[in-house]
Length: 59
View 1 (cartoon, rainbow, N blue to C red):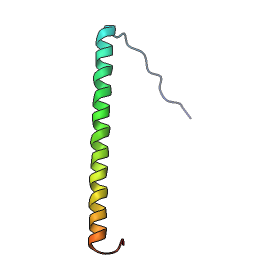
View 2: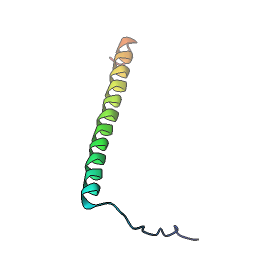
View 3: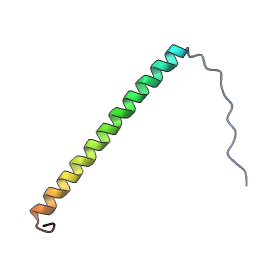
View 4: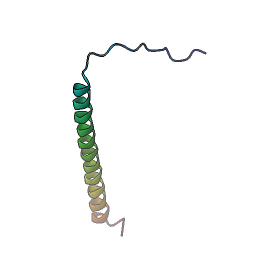
């Protein structure tokens, strides 16, 4: 059984400032995506609660 192929590191032409800016923006996008997914889950949960209560099978 063979393992995963080894990857070779390429030389990066990014400056430390550009890399820091990229990481800062990526972190912001990740938090925005987390908030959007959390909001979507809350909406689905609220709809499920309303529907279950409406049809009388929850309480």
